[in-house]
Structures are given as structure tokens and as C-alpha cells.
Length: 460
Image 1 (cartoon, rainbow, N blue to C red):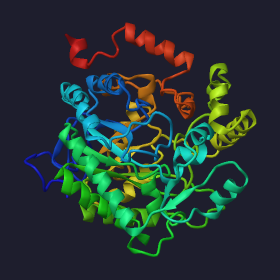
Image 2 (tube, one colour):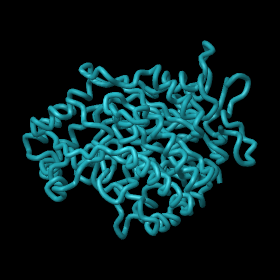
Image 3 (cartoon, rainbow, N blue to C red):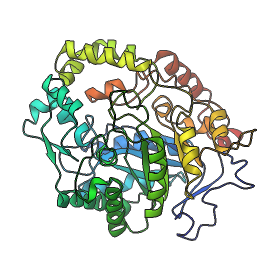
Image 4 (spheres, helix red, strand yellow):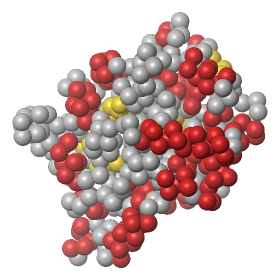
């Protein structure tokens, strides 16, 4: 449990008087690691890969965030296996200890600004590129997807229609233990390289979510209870990385399509969070998700500018298997953009329910864009409603403003319009960056006026 490790005297829940007020600038203890404030950069794709310039790319992407005062940076989903498992092009793999050792340059850069950095470990399972990326399949014809069980009939139907390609390898019991040990080994490499903690990607249709979800998990061994996989990962992390702080997302599949009958309910997810804390997880990130990789991950407007970009049309066609299929995906994208709730902090009610059950920090992300929303979810409401979380995070806004932390901590708001023009091009291997002219222009104006200097620097 948080507060039982290390020598930190910081209250792991960080609140007083029944949790009435917690300032965004207050420190927080996560598993014995003291984070200097309550603002974090949520994990997103850095598209750095593993090539010669990968470490420099990660430093250029993440160091400005720490320099702007953000207390905790989550490096985005990093794949634990030497092949397969990537849900998008140019994801970074962390199976090779020699490569991870080079990332000490990144952790040193973050620490030089008094920030903390956790590494998110991941594997795509059935969400891997071998399932959906046409050009990738052409170049890797023999690659199979790791599967928790035989794929559900809905995915098999899409396979028969030729919209995806399924060649699953259902993991044996021993192979599941082997995958858990691989998560643990990668956590050990990360700790040796100076990472302050480990974050498990357990949502957005990752293989961890597939273990947890009754939609995917129909096993008949001990891992029929998906929490058992997270227990095995926890034990492996402790074996290889000691008492490093360990965080996981906790999915509730409450926005699954209506034709999905088997999914993780909210009640089940709250109970799951309590189980994970009992196992020894040091913080949880409750998120409402779908059973599929859809717009529930990046809720917001239809990214028309990105889909219409002349220079990306051939790349979309290569990814989805032709121009007509790319157009069909874009149409589906347009329809889904209308479906999902965009209320700032859309996971807040879920977080609040989990917070009532656990005694470790609960982290909130999902659509936060203003300092007022951050403060609102960290503090009790006027009606006596408990705070939703101990930390608040943003993801896409940092694509638009890498040094956003300086403005947020000074009481200002993010420029991000949740238009998603930054995310869709990532299916082609493009890096995440803001492509909305009005936002880019305003960011330039703010930069020229010194808005991204930290408060103490401005005062000097």
C-alpha cells in the first residue's frame, strides 16, 4: 500500500479535513516516490521507435514537459516483446536491456528539472498491427497475434469480410506466465535506467484489457480471472524491479457498442480496482472504454483536416488496404465522433467511486483542458461531493504545447480544441503534433511573449 514504503512523509492521499481542498501544486506520494505536484502528462504515442535517433526523439518530446513544471511524465506505451504487439507504427520496444540502458539520458533529463518519469509497458495482443494494418501484414506475412482466447465472433466476422486479418496464437498457461515475466524483466531494465515507476497499459484494447474483459477472455485455466494476470505481472515486477512504484489503468467497458453483451461493468471494475490495490498496486487510473479500438480513446471532434491532408492519403490507403477502405474508416470515425461524451474529466464519476474503495492515489484523465477543471476534480464540491482524484492528467494538449505545464500551474488553460487532427495521422507513422492553424498560431504568440517560462522565471 502507498504510504507503507520508503521514508516519505507526504500524505499518499494528499488531502486534509476529509479531502476538502488539494492544490494542483501540492506534492504527492506514489509508492514511496514523491511527485512534486498533482499534474501529469498522460501516456500518448511518442512515435520514437528504436532507431539511432530514438532516445533524442524521446528527450525532445518529453523533456520540455518536465521543464515546464509537470510533476510526473508517463512515457507512452512501450512494447515488451521483440516482435509483434505494436498497435501503431513507430512504437518503442523495451525488451532489449542495451537499448533501455541508453534511455538513462532521458531519465536524467527529466530529473534535472525535478520531475519524475514512469514507463508505460504494453502489448497490443489482438489490437496489433498484424490485425489491421494492410501494408504491415504484407511485410510480415507470417506474424501472428498473441490472443487471450479464440477471438470473439464479432472480430471473426470482420475477418471474414476482409476488413481485418486474424491469425491468432492463443497463449498457453505457461506462455501467459512467460509474458508476465517479460513485463517484469522490462520493468527491471527500466528501473536500472533510472525510471521512477512503472505504468501498465491496461485499457484501449491492450492485451492486459483483453485478459480482464469477458468479451475477450474465455479461458478455462487460472487466467480465466483476468486479475490473475495482473497479479502475475505484479509479482514479476517485484522480482525484477523491487519496490518500484507500480501503477495500472483499470478499464470499465461502459461505452462498448450495444451488440456487445459480455463486458466489464462499472461495478465489476470498481471491485477490480480494490483487488489490484490489495495485490500491491500503488495507484490506479480508472478509465471508461470500449471493447474496441475506437473514438472512445480520443473523444472529440471529427478530424476532417487530418483525413483530407493530401500528403497522407496514400499512407492511409496503405494502412487500411486501399482508398475506399480508408474512406470507410474515415466515415466510421465521423459517426463515432458524435457518439461519445466529451464532458471535461469524463472519467471523474468512475474515479470517485474507485476512490471510495481504495487507499492509494487515484489518477484522473480524459478531456481535461482548463485549470478550473483540474482544481474542481482535486477538491470537494460545494455540495460535499468528494474529490474525484489525487492527480489530474492531460495527453493531447501536450502535442500542441509541450511546455503547457508552466501555463497550467500559473492558472491558465490549455489551447487544445480536442479536434483529433494530431492523432489520426499516427496510423501512418506520423508523430503526434498539432495541425490546427489557429492553435499553432496562438502557441507561437504565447511563446514569443514568454508564457511558457515557469512562474519563478517570469517573476525574475
